[in-house]
Structures are given as structure tokens and as C-alpha cells.
Image 1 (cartoon, rainbow, N blue to C red):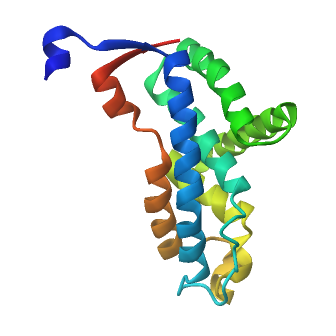
Image 2: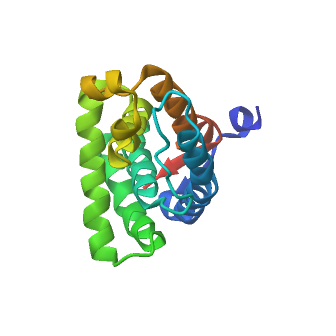
Length: 181
């Protein structure tokens, strides 16, 4: 309400970036063990994938790549590129790997998600599909779905619902703040 009366508070992406990266990093660190447990105990699988709670590196790349692609929904191509130029170095630094290597991997994951999204037409579903593929979950499905080489729809529905919680809520954020590169 007050933002409508007094205007939105202006923030630069450089101001937002540290919190953005830290909050997503914390969410993935705290959330992945829950996802691992869900998948390990999934009743639709023929056997448990035995995903370790600390094997979250692929997951972190998927979530950060998905969040970077999600920026394109809320900003112009020029603004998106400028925002990504600020965020990517901070994200790669937070991943704890060699920054140049992490940068290349992150860009590869963005392209991987972008390609999945061409068929999925839904970023969150594409992120769930990326998890399914990166953690090779087809191996643990029932024979029927293994032969189809397609995820069980029940598993994908659950995974999609959870993965959606890891996207930055730009819609709500932009209701309060005006963001500039």
C-alpha cells in the first residue's frame, strides 16, 4: 500500500545480489536433504536411489541456473543480461569451486535448462526434469517407466511442486522495489 502512495524504493542489483545469492544458497543447503529424503523414500520407485543429503552440487547449479533464467521473465533482455553479469560472479564464488570452472558449468546448466524448457514450456517443470536427469532417477523407476524413458508423472508432480519453492519471487519483490542494473 505504501509503495503505491510513496513510490517504490529503488534498489540496484548490486545491492540485492549478496542477499539473493545467500538466500538461494541457504535454501538449497537446507532444502536438498528434504528432496533427497523424498526421492529416497519415493513409493513410485522400484528401488531407492540412495541420494546422499550432501550430494547437492548439481541441485545448486540447477536452482541457480533456473533463477537466472527466471530473471528473463521479469526484465527486458538488456536488463536481464546486465543483472546476470552482476549475479553470475557472486553465484560462482558461492559455489566454492574455481570461479572460471563454476562459471562455465553454470552457463552450461542454464543452456541445459533452456533446452529442456523448449519441450517442457515451464521453467519449474524443466528444473524438476533436470534433477531427474542429473541424478539419473530413471534407473530407479518401475520397469514400465524405465522402458518409456520418462519420469513417472506422480514423481514429477511432487518434484515440480517442491522445486518451485526455490525460485526467487520476483513478482512480489517488484511490487515493493524498483530494480535497476
